[in-house]
Length: 317
Image (cartoon, rainbow, N blue to C red; front, side, top):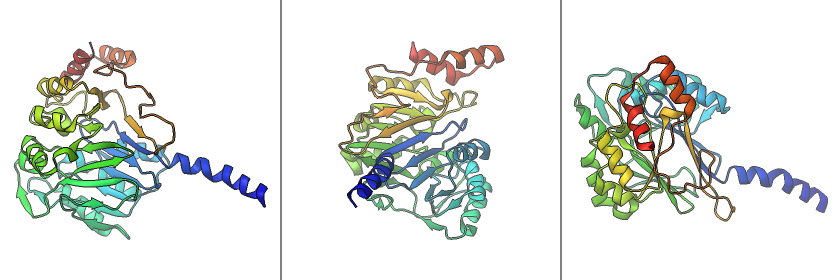
């Protein structure tokens, strides 16, 4: 009997350890957002899907995903919702989280909502700011912003400011995921949640737009790592230099999906494993991720010019 228990321990303990961490992937989907999280209890979360279905579909299939417990649409802009259509078509989705923002210049957002309604066994939720989502008993998932009353607008700023903002907190570290929320929402969250915004990891709002990531907000969040989800050839000039300078001033290390999917790990308590970013345990005091040589060479060979790439390259020097 004792020998049997030892064998069972060897089989199950490594499995438990592997699932006791919180892991987040900031997926390279071009000019858009898609964040995939693996929870300590084995559940999973997808926040936004990027501007097309292929990148997020290929990422999820490569990870062996067949079902997604929680899919979140932060707000109805096509660089966030289009990829989710493929997700609903290809995977078993259990829960869908949405705002009541209606982008009256778009049809695709409502197509997505129809897919969610048609998905077998999928429930749609409109979470209220200030509530905690019961996704994992060991992880606090707090809603910091959302539009839970109907908002109909064609104004991009209005739609951005309905972004569903979430903060994951596990083992003493926060991951703040901000959608495309702009400065007015950042100010409101500071007034309401105060020190509850502090997070080791910040998914920089609105792809590094100058209209987000204010000095006061960054001082409240105190990020050690900032991740910018952005496309190298975007027409918006994202990330803007003003935002990059403000983030740099905090001392946070900056990563970008321009250089591929970025990932981070928060280990389980007392596991004896440090925080990891892209598999590296020591963040050190470097401010910006160095540009990989092969990426730069590819840009030179193809003749692609990118303001976003140049901004990040300059920051790394």
